Length: 250
Ligand SMILES: [Zn+2]
Image (cartoon, rainbow, N blue to C red; front, side, top):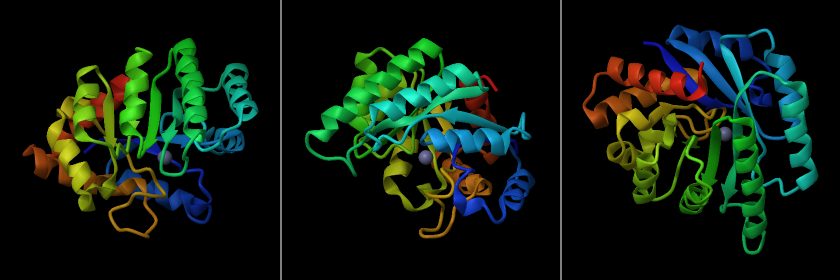
């Protein structure tokens, strides 16, 4: 199998002790490429240093945790992307989080989301969207802005909206936590394999709750998708890898 992990946080402190082992274990099960996503300016700077020696294996997307409601920070991250001209394959994760953010703050969050959508348009890069408890609102905004070069990561919203978004060309990446999530299982059942990719979101969203997640756990996602879709594991791996290569141009 040749797999691509389209969303992880390998720079996370959780991996400081054994990052090399984690990467080796991923390679052993067939993970050929991993995309790591950053969440603030410091995270982007650390990741750039940390992974500069892993060209062709680890790729980066640069974004901002949607709960950081600070326009200055957003501007800094965007100039980092512009000035450094580092090799990034997407903007993200960015988006909406209605689990942690309530009331009027949600309107503010939408404004920031719009800034990021415009930035992705300007840079002509795909967007990796976080939409915890806000799937419908994120999809609505993206459709309004007519930006469909989008990967919805670990989407937890209603399947109906996902079907609508998939029709417009959106992709959905599925984490190993699908083994325990009826919502994720329903999502996979409802959208075509041509719209699906694999993500770990390591160190979270693993097959076992409360246990650190790693890219090697992509094999759990492959197995579950193959079961749900009645496709061989090889087919699931080939299709999701092709989707990821085309979307990120890697
Ligand atoms: Zn993430």
